[in-house]
Image 1 (tube, helix red, strand yellow):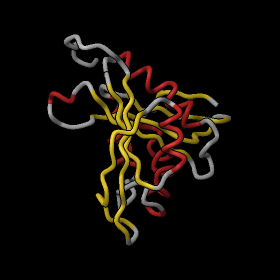
Image 2 (cartoon, rainbow, N blue to C red):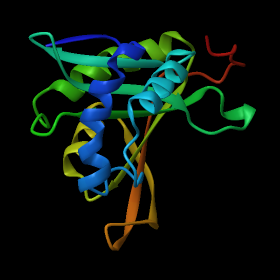
Image 3 (spheres, rainbow, N blue to C red):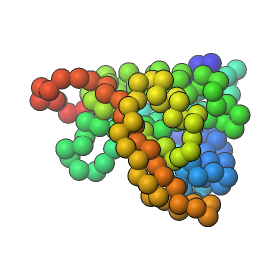
Image 4 (cartoon, rainbow, N blue to C red):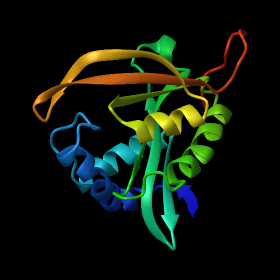
Length: 172
């Protein structure tokens, strides 16, 4: 397995990987799968200051991970939200760990101090992955979203990327 930077040329494969999460599960709170053009826009946005990575096996994309802003207010600019999506059947194969193994250090090198992950419950695979990487649970938004005929809870975990109380410089 290899991990590389995404480009907008990866939009179609990322959209295909993501589609089942939108259509068949409550893991994503989106209700309409993004098309290739929208996914290209998302990749381009993430690459501007954060990151978007692709995991490949034998030259074929099997998953992706990315980071983006945690929240819009300026005081949050040193925190980011991270996500990982894998092809159906690729959970618990090491692909998520490989993606985060590149993504998290890159975010720290860019000056981000905290990574936040949000997971629709239940999602044992995602909870286990994040816990194994040191993410700490910080809360649950109960019944925060309605999808597939039920109210859904969202767990929030976070990982400290950089420690210290000194005044930070802006993320790069």
